[in-house]
Amino acid sequence: MAVCVAVIAKENYPLYIRSVPTENELKFHYMVHTSLDVVDEKISAMGKALVDQRELYLGLLYPTEDYKVYGYVTNSKVKFVMVVDSSNTALRDNEIRSMFRKLHNSYTDVMCNPFYNPGDRIQSRAFDGMVTSMMIQMEPEQPIMVLHSRFFTCIVRPDSQEDPACLGFLWV
Image (cartoon, rainbow, N blue to C red; front, side, top):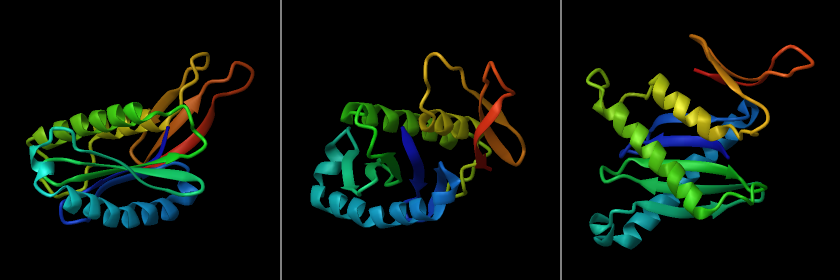
């Protein structure tokens, strides 16, 4: 699944960035930042055709040795960037599209919140939970729980032989 999800404003500043594992966070921020140039190139190449299209999926922006970076642009020029692990060969293009559609729907829900000021960082728990579910690769035989606290989100897989172990922290 995704290892980094970013929502970038029209003016190219981050509204939301979440990455797992957190030790590579700076690397993912850099990848998202450099992908904005490719997004701008693709948008300018499409020109007027982008306005007429309903599908705003930009596809693969660029691959690296370890990761693939995908892009999506809304009608209001808000950019979604998703970094996916290259070793995940089961993830197809139509699955990436559906992940972007879910992200766009959740972003629309955030925008419809009367207490959200457009342009502020996204701090919605519902949006955060949806992104977290996109980042976790679930195994059907092992349930996964997501525990939220004020400062972090812990992804837990209960193990029958030992105490529940935290698989990773997502700092809020």
